[in-house]
Structure formats: structure tokens, C-alpha cells
Amino acid sequence: MRFDRAGYPFVGGAWLIALVLWITLGQAFAAPFIALGAFFAFFFRDPERVSPTDAHLVLSPADGRVLVAGATLPGASPEGEWQQVSIFLSPMDVHVNRVPAAGRITRVLYRPGRFLVASRKEAATENERSEIWIDHAGQTVVARQIVGFLARRVVCRATVGDHVRAGDRFGVMKFGSRMDVFLPLSATIRVKVGDLVSGGETVIAVLD
Image (cartoon, rainbow, N blue to C red; front, side, top):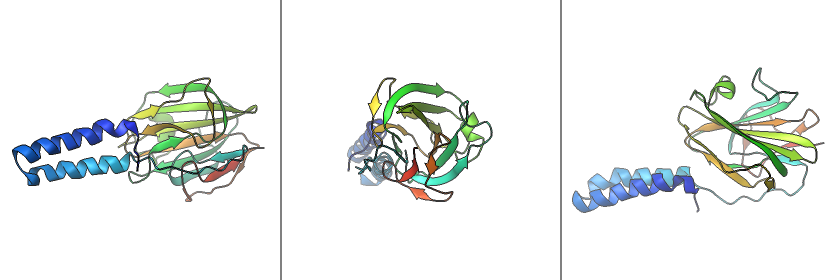
């Protein structure tokens, strides 16, 4: 199992401390840091996914549970008229994020903010977040990474001008967070609140 490079300092740091403690003080003192390193490796795991290839599909950008599927939350969406799908990631979910729709990235935005629990409605407008805008044959899809109470850092590796496929990796969120996807009104949403979804695999909408 591979894991995201954002986890290297956490995994390596924990296991380096474990090694030093094992040599100097013994196995009992090293055990907590061995376990901590194993947790970090689990958290930053990056499993391979097989994505559907239909160009009109919008895929889940993350593993988790659907919080919103339909009308946008008040004040949460970019300017204009949109539909919204929001996904809450627990600390046990895979936190590598994937591009929801094929196309060209036209914007990459970052906004500092608070660290409210990601499942709260206010998190969409008040928390630290990063978002990518994707032009899909003239239709725009926006994917927003939102950090939470535990996830206090967002990593976005997408750049303006990139041509992407649905399911491509583009970033990671560190320790429990949320993804919002904003869709054109013409899109047909295929998930409902409470559904469990898999990043890069579950179809959350179909573009007109």
C-alpha cells in the first residue's frame, strides 16, 4: 500500500523517535511511537482506484459520507447558481483527494480561515479552504477542500492550465475534513444525504 508524500514527515518522524528510544531505553518506550507511525501511515494511505471513463460523469473527490446533495447551503457557494454535494471525511477515511470531473483547471484559490468541526454548516464559509475550478466543455465544476477541527492543513497540487481526468489525484487534507463540489444546475445528482462514497469511484452526478 502506497501513501501520500505529505505523510512522510509524520511517519518518518514517529518511527525515527521509536528507533532512538528502542536503542536507548528499550522496546516498551518505543512501542507508542511505532503505533503512532503506523496510524500516520494508515491515515495517509493512497490506494489505487479504478475510475469510470465516461467523460460526462462527476466522481466523488473523496471517501466519506454525503452531508449535502442538492440545493446549495446559504452563503456557501461561489457566485452564481449551483447545486452542491458535500462529503464529510472521518479520520478513518482515505484523505487523498481526487479530481471530480475531466477538463482544464481555470482557477486555484486558497482562503485562510477557522478550524470548526467540518460537519458544521458554518465550516463551508468560515474554515480554511482551497478550491479548484474545472472547465468541462464549457461547464464549470468546483471542488473545494475544507479543513476541520483535526485537519488543519490542506495540500492542493493542482495548477491553473492543468488538463485533468476525473479520478486524478490532486491533493490531500491532514486529519479529518470535508469536500464540497459545486455543479451546474443542469447536472443530475446521483447521491443522497447519508450515502457513503469512494473517492475516484462513486458517481455523484452526471453533467448534461
